[in-house]
Length: 186
Image 1 (tube, rainbow, N blue to C red):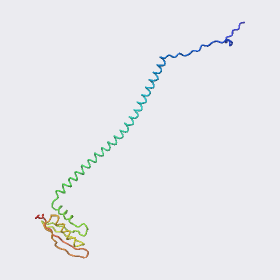
Image 2: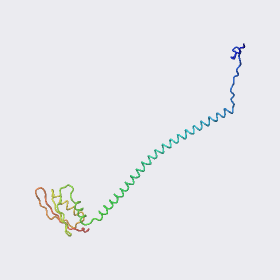
Image 3: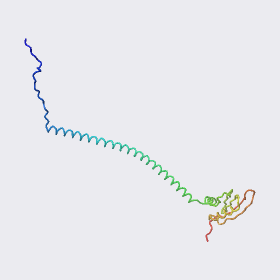
Image 4: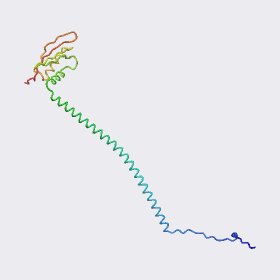
């Protein structure tokens, strides 16, 4: 019988060939170029992506600011309308004031002629033709003299005369007669 040893004999040493990798310069250059291209593309992508984020945030912020400005513009338009309306009303009031005649001017003159201390009050103002009669009460008789002087100074009356002054318990009753018409300036 023959024995065949299929196992390698351990006593015999065989030489193994070690393969040493052979690197070519062209391959290294190609790999380096590829890595540089991938790095450049990745850097460009990162830069563009960051720019897109920044511009998107800016766009959103500007949209919010635009909405706020549009609201302010609407409010300004409303305020301008109100301003024009009020200016028109003021114009009408001033026009009416300029066109005041007769009784309105008379009442304004009498009101502005009254002393400001509240010591004189009126209970009758009667105008018939060119004659105006004013009656009232006063706490101090000097107030009547001041009132008459102020009436004369308005220029609405030719003359202002005291018709009656009568002392009572708490106040004095008075009556003043005025002749309507502008005074002649000498």
